[in-house]
Amino acid sequence: MALPKLPGGPVRLTNLSVPGYLVGASTPFAPASVAIRDGKFTADTTGLPQIDMRGAIAFPRFVEAHTHLDKGHITPRMPNPTGTFEGALGAVGADAAARWTTEDVRARMTFALKSAYAHGTGAIRTHLDSQPPKDGIAWPLFAEVRAEWADRIALQASCLVTCLYLTDPAFQGTADWVAKTGGILGAVTYPNPDLQAQLDIFFDTADARGLHTDIHVDETMDPTVNTLRDIAKTVLARGYDRKLQVGHVCSLSTMPEKEALETLDLVAEAGIDVVSLPMCNLYLQDRHAGRTPRNRGITLVHEMVERGINVSFASDNTRDPFYAYGDLDMIEVMREAMRIGHLDHSDYPWFRSFLANPAAACGFDTPDFAPGKRADMVICNARNWTELFSRPQHDRLVMVGGACIDTTLPDYEDLDDIMRIA
Image (cartoon, rainbow, N blue to C red; front, side, top):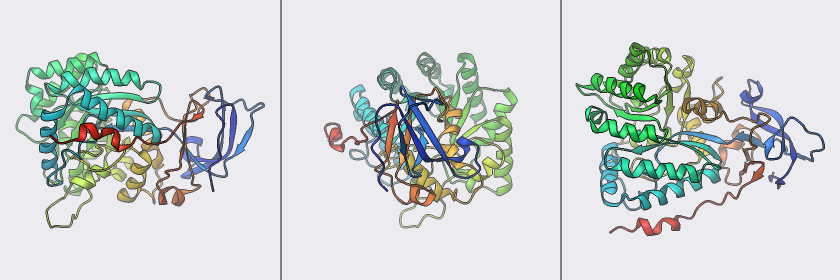
């Protein structure tokens, strides 16, 4: 089946297959028709020409809840020497110190956003390395890029600092950048004797500025690491009621089952959202030279949804030392998550985790086909589950404002000038 050429004007697309949850169905996909007039979805089909889509799968544009646009695409000039988490930290630190200027970060951010837009993403939250002097580069630049892309991709940013930095008075200056730019307060937690004091400062700072929060948590296969439990207990003790998303939580998959499930009970009670980053975690976790990995690194997503926890999936890093591949393509993330997490034999509507769930976690507009919303959608040359995930859907149609956009991806040659190694 070849997808038909769609007009840029009023039209009714019949015989589509859409995620079942969008139309109140319990099946992965359900039949639907979509009408478009004046660049928006409409319930008024009067006089609209019809096109039979022959069962083609259609999604609203996707939502990426966790990326790193400032790090992206540096692997050609600064690869991870070992493929490990520690190797990634060192490589990114060296590259940032040597090459991260406003012009360099802008070029790589723009390249990444062009890719995401062509693939069909409509909203992105990025983390920005924000310990001084990076915050002085990242936040003013992000404000400019967000304005430039406002009509194409909705953008949010969260600061990324270590938990040790939270007790440094300079953290309050970083938080001021975040508040001034309308961002999200973020951090990375790991076990240390002062963790509770650090968490208290973090949430005090968020409360004082009215900020939502996002924390990188337990990105390790060490079964003794469980700062997620500390975070959940702190949220409950404080009555913190703003949005909090946590990412990674890989160690849940290796710690004793009883401890992991009791921790998830606390997470559910605290109302914490979780974003899983399966491609990056599969790349970094349980990597040892000359040894085949035994663990996947994916967190306990099935156990989370059983408890009513809001679970999303996202790309995380792209072509940087934390993940050497990727292109901010949410269909790729979806395909890989299905395989890695065994999502395919489940009653939960997992397509929510790429659409409604991340939108709710981040506060983006809910992606759906409701009348009155801008007609943004992704149409795939596939009619069912196995056709969708057996091919990369490189020939997908991406519609923004009722018209199909040019889905030509940016050429890697566009980055050659900043990839040259001194």
